[in-house]
Length: 457
Image 1 (cartoon, rainbow, N blue to C red):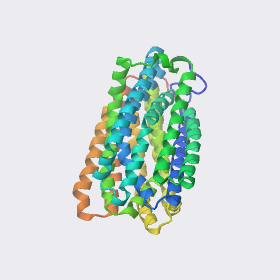
Image 2: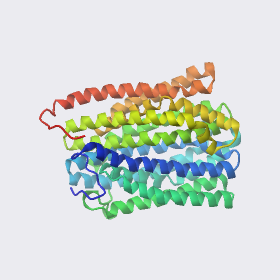
Image 3: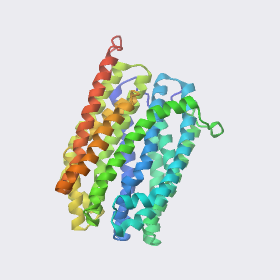
Image 4: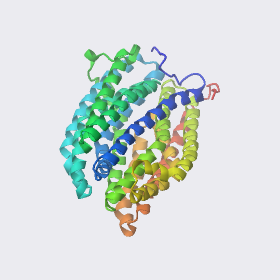
């Protein structure tokens, strides 16, 4: 299998430097994505209707429920592509690329139809404040029109990341993000379209990003090249994608379901609380960029070395990724904790909104390193091809614990602090279970690596 200059082969050579080279574009990609989204929120918060920021914030976990399931399934393609790249299996890689893109198109259309059909029901079922409901429904319906492009982009980027190309998705995001901000300002400020303008700008930018990722795959050389006339489902590849991807999709769905339950609790505190939690969430996602990058880096480096059967190198990579992510988020979390009032104030100047936003930010950042343990250990398990194990731990620790907390603990105290406490508790539980699974698997792999030479870190 040919390796071009955009690829990073993490199955040979010094490992730590390659992990850093791989992760930095991912961090920048996520931060830019958040910056563009934050620009949307600033525009709608300052020039849109006073209810619009809360209306958009209330839809985040709702829209994520359906979208995240398909995005999670793309993880199956990501893991397989990394393993095939490490094993230099060109034939399997070619079948995988065309199957993954075909699956993303079909799945994206299905999610769009379901999302549009269920938008009104989901908004009403989660106690979105009555005065924001019509805007929330409008925003969701328009956004779901762009979901096929969003899912196609996610599958395409999953393949690129698997072979070490994290720079191309970064460049695609820059082009699409700049377009999104320009259109957002035009639709909201000039045309006065409010939430419909924000959603419309998002859909147009998603179309551009999907187009760019398809063109990149078409221009690739070797096994990762996409030829549209060969676009079809290979049933063995589909079965393997679904075997790894469905548990990951269900895991993403578990997060969304639990977040919907928590959002329902937040909604009971009124519009200011919803707007404050939305602003706090946007600030929190800035720090999550580090966790996101290390999660996907772990999948790629573990997947490539597992495919290459370099088990000792794989085990060292897991130590580097998990330890590095925990230390970075611990230090960064302290900085975000201190500056949270100023960061929240960027999104909204209402003192009541800022109060709730700071409350969320500070409760999250204190123990954010637990999320790093949880996500990187989950990424390591997926890279090893054990997608079911992190899905089960997530089902127990997020969907289970959080829903039970909202149903039985929260009603007795009805405090925002008590509601938010369920986040770090669930991170801790899932991280412990994942690391136990990892220790068992790594102990087993170490027996197969006795004759391997010591690697350079």
